[in-house]
Image (cartoon, rainbow, N blue to C red):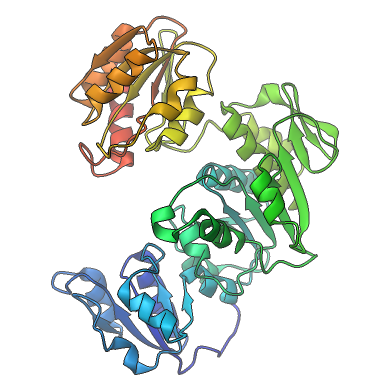
Length: 449
């Protein structure tokens, strides 16, 4: 961690007692700041609050007092999930109090450079893939951010000869001021989180924070195939490295049906790649470009690309059962993600789908249902999903009440060379606390076959 005295005596309000808030509060206290933590939940029975209080940190729970900001805080560290429409945050904005997320703090303190990955889809896969390549390439990577490890905690311990691979959400990036990664990756942009940001323009602006502070010494790896991204980055000073899956290009990294090309030259054969799907090819190109720019050699990259089968619950290869290949895509909680999954296969698909009823349309999936031979529908949307599947001409539609029943039903309806795919296109909360538990139950049921 860099030596700094800039936080000594600073009055800091940390809003939100999730992992990032707890980590930021403790770190700022150690750096000499006068920290107050505020959380909407009551303090009774809250172990995190008790731990902070034991460190001498004031914790205010049970709501956001209207007079809290009268204490003249120098800045606020906000939990990324708290929207800017929150009354306390709105009040802070009106008072011109700087509002950070903890990755701004990480950027100030870290001795190690950052590779930051953002985008609507593919962040976790790209982050994980790049981490594995850097690790095989002996670049001493650390992993942090939205993938589950608090960035400022990692930054506190990071050394100058290490690299922090950071998955950064739009929520996190919106709360940065001077954060500057040495390499930034912008995977793609689709309409998402508009309830939080208010508009696609504000969402894009938050994403661009990943590169806004870069200089001509830094790299921005971006999706050349998306016009909105191409147009939005033209004024940035970074060295721009495009990636494209639409055929060979002379700049950056690209791919066709046979090769990955680096600066227009054949670099790695597509045949060695284990991770299926065009969308995953985008992630592979972005991660490979970052690995090359970080000094990794081709054998290290080939080693990972020939063995990496996906992140858990994200197009995760599970096993082969008597000629059926099984994939877990429980993370697909919307039609966009399921669309990507369906487009990844050329063989017939037995699809397990359905979940929480939010009233959203499945029509976006229609052009991708031709390869679906059977649908096994689950959850609150089961009947509606089956009706949609029938309207698409799907050969057979079935229902199941539990995941074990769904897996057995899908297997019995499948034939050799089929893909059995869990890609729900819906959230899990009607039957499971989260998509991870839903995916774990799917894997458990598959292993029992």
